[in-house]
Image 1 (tube, rainbow, N blue to C red):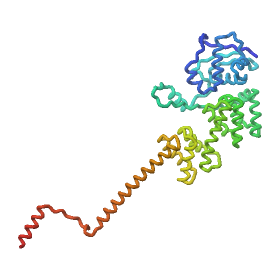
Image 2 (tube, rainbow, N blue to C red; image 1 turned 135 degrees about the vertical axis):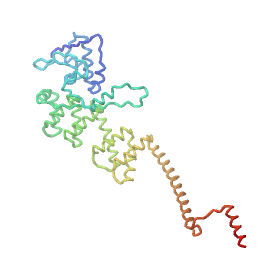
Image 3 (cartoon, rainbow, N blue to C red; image 1 turned 30 degrees about the horizontal axis):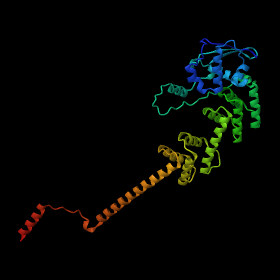
Image 4 (cartoon, one colour; image 1 turned 60 degrees about the horizontal axis):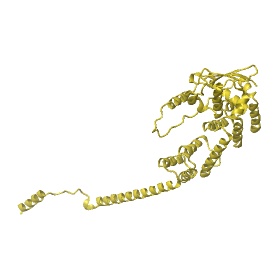
Length: 374
């Protein structure tokens, strides 16, 4: 295997990571890719080392395919310039400055929304800031050319993935399937075993379309899932959550996209435990007679604003509401009784006409008129 030479135009006495790399590149990269990049930088200070793909794989406890995949990722990101010989073997790697302007066209321009998010994240954070929200990850999906597909599918590991997936799907892979597999493998950076688990999981739910599988994959990537173990833990939690909601609502189907958004809000934004959400679903069924996610969301939003964290908190709110309702009912009853008495008084025949009020002068005047008549 060829020995690889490294080149840089910076000092080699220390290993320095530029802030632009940490801010713009590292958050979106697979952890293994970051490990390869940093170790390569370390190797610059020792140009006499016998640097090969096999050496890197052994040193970093990765497979040679993982090392090659990491190098392709950083090459596509515009941080490495890689020279290869006629057989495709890497012979030289040049580090490029990790600036936004150095990204290659292959990495594509970010959307306006992503640009705004990046600017918003590039501000100083005060010590009294109550919450620091992370900028959502975005994943650019390239459209692989025939030449790129031919090059990537020539990799043994990719061939193995595709052959296995054809067995899972029980059919030959379509062009959209091939594009998706290469996207997951090369752009998002899913390892082979995670891609296989992804398809196995979706097929077990009788979902074989590329669009559905891609949606699940992107959700995992946004959650930082990059191993089968993390995926298993996430799917187990998700299944328990939506099974509990389905049972409370009497549903026998998978939740729809809007319903998933409501459930995500209940479990993650409001951070409620299953018993609280089940209680909200039960009250929704009693009030509406149907599984109304919007109605349940209003209940849970109200509980969240009032700081509910347990069923005991809900019980206290119910008691307080019952007490206030009783007081309100008593006040209404008293007001109604007073209104009834007033109405009875106004209907008395002796009070049918407006009553005149007499003063002392009026009485003296009437007395004088009576005396004069005599």
